[in-house]
View 1 (cartoon, rainbow, N blue to C red):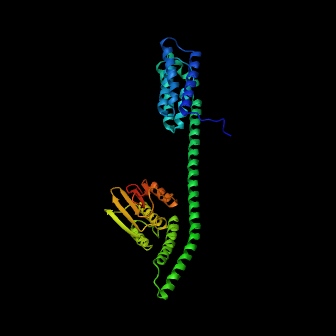
View 2: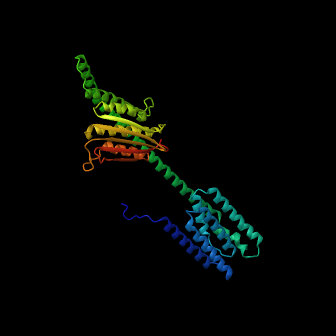
Length: 375
């Protein structure tokens, strides 16, 4: 549909207009009554200067307005009878840029200067200034240029507002869709997890009534079911902007490590530096990094030990999770959605994430989160 359309650079357009205006005013000035000698050269120079200045109307509309106005006064006082096209273009551009009051003041002042010049020099070349003003700077032309600039400015402003409205609507619909998906996911997972939790609790209860030792794996399943249910509720409430259940943060990592130990893998938590308050987003991301890393260890690493390091550094919170699994530099696992989610969270905060096999065997997850700019 738009194969024949192409974008013309703004500078090319501006210079094309300037050259066209220059040719128009020079042709009009030299073809009509005009002085000779030095005044002719001065008038031609002023005509060209005022017209060529139009090329800068986007970058400096008020400067172009002043240059065009002064050149109009100069070449008319020199005796050139020509329509001040360059000044009309300057008026249009200045009003379009939003300088309505300044443009109106300058235009009224310019007319007053022309009238004053004719009164002071009644016998000179400027005695025709008032009559020239009727064809060069008459009020109708000025109003037309002023109105055109204002109309274009209003149209551009409405277009900008419409674009912002479309973007805000798109963001709102995306947020609503995410919330809808979160609710559906919550309803689906809650049912399945509830079944797992109930079955595990029944198994634990039956084993205890029989006097049997409850397997650690079964207890871990029971606790994981409770925790998953609580997290699903907390996540949905957070999406609904409900602050009754605050999300997990750094304070919950010790409990997370204790839960992980119930799976049979030895886990250790080390905290270095001087613990201090960090932005909530940083705390949430740190918790999710540790949680996802330990989950991967229990599912895929075939490890026996895991270590978690939380290091409070100036302006940065460093997290490191290592395990002694079977991963080697020659056999690296394919990154899954968990690692991708971690990377997205860290990148959103302006931090850095590195995940790779350890040379001695096992896997390491290292993250650096800035604590002086996150929210």
